[in-house]
Image 1 (cartoon, rainbow, N blue to C red):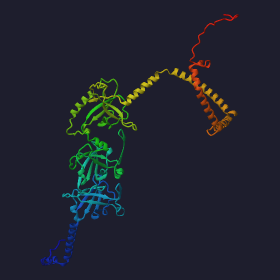
Image 2 (cartoon, rainbow, N blue to C red):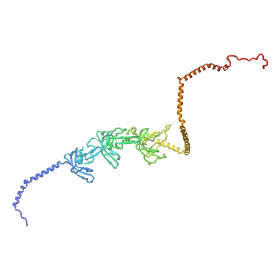
Image 3 (cartoon, helix red, strand yellow):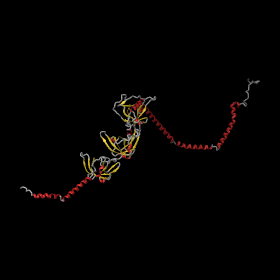
Image 4 (cartoon, rainbow, N blue to C red):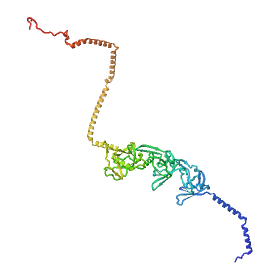
Length: 566
């Protein structure tokens, strides 16, 4: 069965009817709707803000469609999508910003998550407890647009565009401050630690510090930085010291800086200048003495109490520092040494004497010390503190009464370092004297001394027994009734004597009688004085009346009576 062609008349009529169908008013409504929809789509696309990508280590608290992006607490965007990166190590956040935020999206703009935090500066982000976390935007100052940013979990330390100075610090791991720690100058907070990264190749910490204006002018090429531990307690050969920083540094540590007294203030530094972070203020001060001479002390005494950093003094003036105790312990000893000595490395630092580092000639100082060695300059260990027993190195001239060196200087070297002449310390000399005394005591014949001591003890015991018996006798004598009555008898005798003395007082009759008798006796003696004087001169006056009579001359009688003998 085949189709029959249509009559020609009907084809012409259909051709004439087609233009009328295109002009039908029913098509106007969909066309207008399409145009309005296209306009709405175009207007919506035109009113949409830019899309940005935020990358963070953790998307904690971030929700697609709910988490807002704010600037000064004004909403400027919203998170649309949260997903993982291709390597699954980070979270990628897609956010839609408001249309008028293009000027904020530059390469130095910063984003961070705001949520409740408790830190050394107090409590922050309490408003997010009910509303939830949000992302804070801090617009930058750059003129280069950007659409991909890093989101920090911590707020920035310093505001963008703040005037100041950013410098770098290098330190050991144990002295590393954390991000946000304060930077202080004489107790005043002048900046913050912005970054802290560890370099595994050099095993050092790299820090970035921001010093606010106008305090950044305090940082010069002579500035030294050290870790602020809050309280620094030091007990060494120089005594007991306590340094206390600010309360914030006491709680969380930080960094402090200053210019040591021995250095000039210096010139201002440029941005990104690198400094060394020292563990404490003393280490920072020691780090200023960058040029020095190294010598080795070969100590034959004990080095107990001598530590690294101990001072080297010349008559009380510090001229150096102990660098290592011991140093190169296994190196061969000089051939001129009979006894094994402990090597100690010291540094002579002429800068401590006010010598400028640029004008310092180390070779000239080395020659000067060699000349002083020949004049008797030696080193010895001395006690710096009786409390701690810490030692220091003392330099002085050792000469005899004639003014010549006590020990002749012999040039020696140890591990390619010149040996500094040494002498025994006073403590070692005392120890030697005590040892000699003990040797003498050991040489004494103590057995005979002990035997004599035993005999003396026996005699002492016998003497004690006699003393005991004598004491018992005295006690018996004291306890006799007659001896007890003796005080009463003495009192009666004294009373009688007092009465007798009262009877011979100048007012008594007996006293007057005695006085009269004595006067009469005196007159009698006065009358007898001429007689006594005569008898003294001529004892014969008692027999003869006159003293001037001539001696008689004997003569014979003229007649002799009868019957008498001739």
